[in-house]
Length: 427
Ligand SMILES: *Cc1c(COP(=O)(O)O)cnc(C)c1O
Image (cartoon, rainbow, N blue to C red):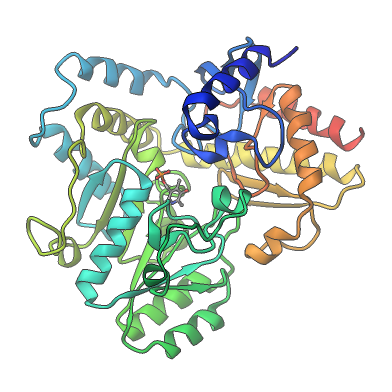
């Protein structure tokens, strides 16, 4: 059997870990079957416990933009770890990565490091509330901002996949301060803002949504939100946990030429270690403890090993700025290949892409928000997923996830992937 050891390991894990996993999306619940336990990885490839090899289109859900076991990152971690793993004091390394991040991203003066994207978004919203002295936030259906209480209202991907976008355990009191809007519908957001005068602290969104498949913003949507926020004293928060240091050096702010007030980071900024961050201009960041009154802290925040990994990652991106263009070209090659082979099959499909984020929905309705993402045929997707997995192509086990292309992926890997998808279309 192809997945014998994975199967046994999953059964054992289930005895000690809820559902056998430490994050629900890993569990294959949506697509059926047993999750594959990985043993090692290098470049564009994963190797599982049964010694099967895969071309990886998840890349740890986004962080590994240069591929697995990148040499610069690996070297930085090994070098750093020999000098102690954590001190609970400031280190020079933190200033080094902070100044580099601030120089790469438009419109930010200061940055605070945390341990995950969840923490970054949670803290960004607290800061926005403290700064504006208002309580409510607007979030978009299908956008995911981590698992903190305020955001588990129609959250995307994992929560959607498991049918619990509104999680039990989130109190009504918390939920009432999160106003839900439809992605890409500026008119509706405007109505919500008008109906809640002087009470909205922030509008938070993924500038390119990546947790209901990939859903880019429609022309004018981000600009309209910027103007709306300016007119009403609302802070615009870009959750760039996925898009930051991926779509461009300066993330979505740079790509679309729209300035956010607060930006949340995660994934790429940690180089594969647990890191998040949030950033803004001085006026806002100086509202944060110990400079200002809004409290936020972390025992292992800015941890030297994590900072060394993140710094090596950002330095690699800085040293080769053509990486974003190259990723775009690779993903374009993948897109056009998939488009042409799926056109030969009988299933309707929609492919959305922005730079190195791409997703395939089995529906011919354009996917622009959660409703349109939800009409796609999940049975077809599940069959597609297993067809690819069994042929050594590893995509996310949910129709609501984006694929992340890494720079280690070669044209031959892409062509092999297209060949497999062609076989799927002809099956
Ligand atoms: C992954 C993700 C998060 C959460 O980050 P974690 O590190 O998993 O806590 C938040 N926002 C977006 C857009 C994400 O993709």
